[in-house]
Length: 436
Image (cartoon, rainbow, N blue to C red; front, side):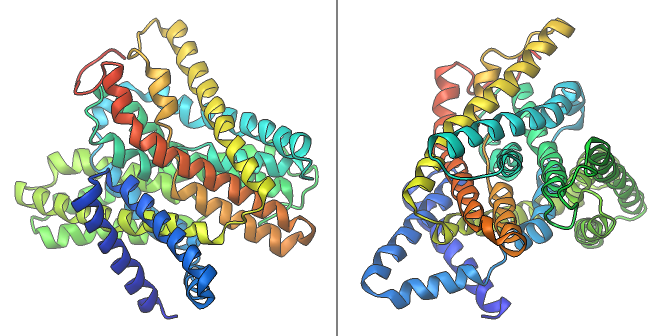
C-alpha cells in the first residue's frame, strides 16, 4: 500500500470513530478513540474467524505501518510542541524541583522496580526464560508517562493548578528521559548498535549518553526557541509566523535526531519558550489566535490518528495464555512502581523543603500516570531489535509487547475514565489554586 492509501484509511477511520465518540459515547478523545479502535479490531478478529481474508487485509495494513517510525520520527515532535505551547512557564518554574526529580530519579526508580517485578513474574512465576536486562528494558518502556495521553485528559479535569502543572510538566519531560534510558539499556543488552552487551557499556558510558542526549536536547531546544523568538519578534505576519513555528518542529526535530540529541526534549523546551515569551512579547493578538487555532488542529488530528493506531495494534499481539497472564500481572506491578517512585520523591521533598503538597497528590499522580503511544512504539522497536539480532529470544519480544500493551490499555481506558470521578471523590475537581 502507498503512503496515501494508508493515510486515507487511517484518517477516514479516525474521523468516523471521532464522530461516533462525540455523538454517542462523549468520552475524552483519547479514551473514546482507543476504545472504539479496540472494538473495531475485536470485530475484525471475529469476522476473520469466519472470513480470513478480512483479517489478512487488516494485518497487512497494520504490518505496513512502522509504528515506531511514524510516532518517534514523525508525530511526536508536533504533539510535544503543541502540548508545551500551552504550559505556563511561571507555574512550571515553581514546580521545577519536583518535576526534575520525577522525570529523572522517578523514571530510573520505576525502571528498576518494574524490571525486578517483571523478572519475578516471567522467570519464577510463569517459568518463561528471560534475561534480566530485557526486564529492565520493559521497565524503561513503561516508566515514562505519555504526555499525549496525559495532557488530553488533564486539560479537561479542573484539577488544582499546581497538581495539573506537576502532572503535565513531568509527562512532557520524562518521556525524553525514558527514551534515553531505553537507548542506554539497549546498548548494555547489545542491541540497536549502542553496545555489544559486554562490560565496557557501563555506568560511565550510560552517564555520557544521558548527558549528551538529554542535556544536549534541552540546550538545543533552548537555542532553537530563542532563534524562533527573534524571528517572530521582527515581523507581524501570522502566516509567516505559523510557518516559522512549523519549521521549528519539522526541521528542529530532524536536526536534533541527526545530531543524536533528544528531539522530544528539544521540542518541549522550544514550545515552552514560544508559548510563553513568544506569545506575550513577539506576537500580535491576531497571530496568537491563528497560531493557537493551527496547533490545536494539528494536535487534535494527530491525536485522533495516534490513538486509533494504538487501538489497532492489538491485531499484532500474541494471545498466548502465559503472555496474557504476564500482561495482567504487569498492570499492578507498574502501578506499584509508580506509587513507590512518586511517593518517595514527594515524601523526600516534603521533609527537605517543609512545603505542603496538594492533598492526595501521590494517589492522583500514581493513577494519573497514563502510558500511551511512546510505550507501544518502544516495545515494537524492541521486538524488531530482538528478532533481527538474537533469534533465540524472539518470544521475549512478543512477551514484552503484550505486557506493554496491557499496561497502556489499562492506564488509558481505566485510568483515563476514572480520573474525573477520582478527583471529584477526593474533593479536588474544579479547583484552580492549592498548596505546592
